[in-house]
Image (cartoon, rainbow, N blue to C red):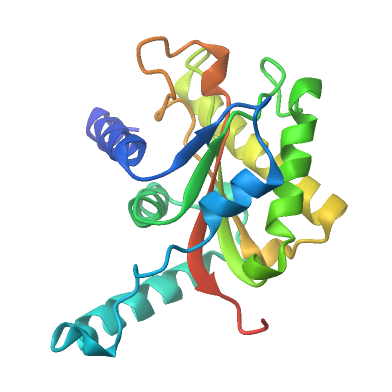
Length: 212
């Protein structure tokens, strides 16, 4: 990865950290909190009264839906750098929650202390109000180790969460888009090696599958 690309991703990460989203520590997470954070907020979508801007918005929304649809059933490691960046840009304006789901050091295994947080996530995503929604599950690592290794590790961690949600809660795999960002978006940029940077962000892309 070039230095320019690395800086570009870090810039997007900084933007994401300033957008409206909820960060919840593993010991404070609940299905209700997750559900509240991921529900689309009223008034975000423009109505028919928005005038001349509506066709532009409709075209942009159609393009966004087409892009999200193209990600369904894709393997995490097949995503290009450009696709990862586009996901991050779209996610910046979507309902999201930053869960401190911790993983064992140098591993994609969920730590015992974080299993309950993943279970609460499963309960929230199973709620009828979110049925058919498409979610991005983004994996992150700390800065220990090489960048290529951390990128691959973050992808494995995202895939672990997806597998848990599909196997334990029956959530459709096509509605879970996994992506890895490695060490490029630390939760604590001042201490990039801190374990809190090993986490998962969940984003409601606010698009529905054909089957509701």
